[in-house]
Length: 194
Image (tube, rainbow, N blue to C red):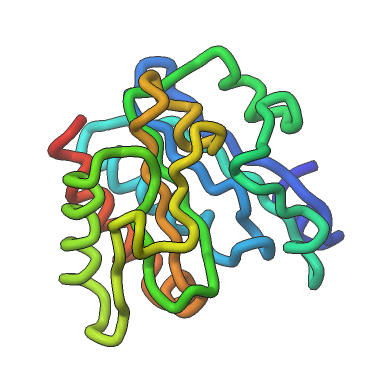
């Protein structure tokens, strides 16, 4: 089903933009109405990295409808490549880095994943520079609820090492109003790493 039909009929669809030679995978596993605007942050990061000369692979799963979260949300720790037609095309691929975008209700922007604290700190610094002063940004695992640290998390599993996934947890307001700033902040760090 294409995006427009999925949106019109409260269904699901996937988007996959793939590059066979990329070092980075960008994920929005809860896009559409599941976790609103996460696909825009992922798509913006994809676009920004392309403009910088990198060509990421990006996968998004869009679920639509008033009850999309309850109907279509699958924890990133339990996502299986074979559950999704387009994601299954990446089953045998691994990337140097993975980045995923999410929403949580914790009241702060979280920069998690298994990737090293130094990189999480750099992303957090860029977010702090770009987001309004009222937005708290956390990157230390012991200060966050949704850490993204589990080996089973798709953003970690998709990396070559299993330890180079970055999970961004936005507040609803951040995702709604500042998704471009979030994407730019992540871009600024990753253009130095790729």
